[in-house]
Amino acid sequence: MKILHWSAGVLAAFAVIIILLITSFEVAMYADYSVYEEEYKKYDVLSLLDMKMEDAMTVTVEMMEYLRGNRETLSVVTTVDGERQDFFNGQDRLHMADVQGLFLGGLRLRTGAAVILALCFMVLIATKADWRNVLSFSYWIAFGIFAVIAGILGIAVAYDFSSVFTLFHEIFFTNDLWVFNPATDYMIRMLPEGLFFDMVLRVGLLLGAWLVLLLGISIIVMRKKR
Image 1: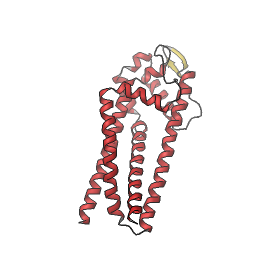
Image 2: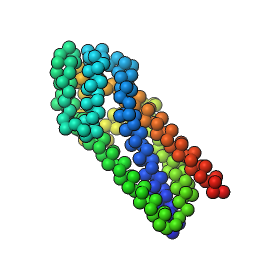
Image 3: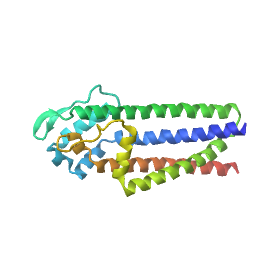
Image 4: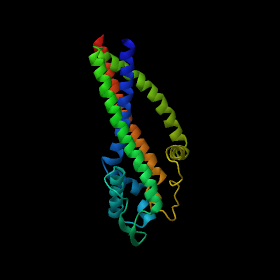
């Protein structure tokens, strides 16, 4: 029975981490669109696009709504490069369709993790396990494993973000549609590599705060058990 308890506990702990990871991405990207405005100022995006901030933010909001599955097509007619035209071209739409699939897949993964978490909790309750103790200690195990993996990735990102960013695309995309030409593709001008680095940092800080908070709660729970 103990094997069942600890297996359910560890599985539940990893499910929690997955839920928080995907939620961190969602919050960092969607909770406050003003962060994009700050990024555009930081990287002088408006000059690169010959575009007003209001128009750039309209494009941004529509693009993010598309990624969340709230728009059927990615098309925004605006003033860019001194002309009234669609901001997105054919390659943009094809690549962003792939990105949308990745985003929506992440949301489905979070839902699946939530289901697994609920099932594991029900197993612990049904088998009369000391679920507070099991979940707290299991979280320590999952946290330790994830911390090692995150630490390695963090070092790699800090040392050479460009290579990690390229490797990410090569792993998750089966085509080269993510390779853009700044001379002809507006989207790559709007979304420079530095912006993605800043977003990864935001996600990491947010996720880290939540994970450490849960670690603190688990420590308190374990001390009360003594």
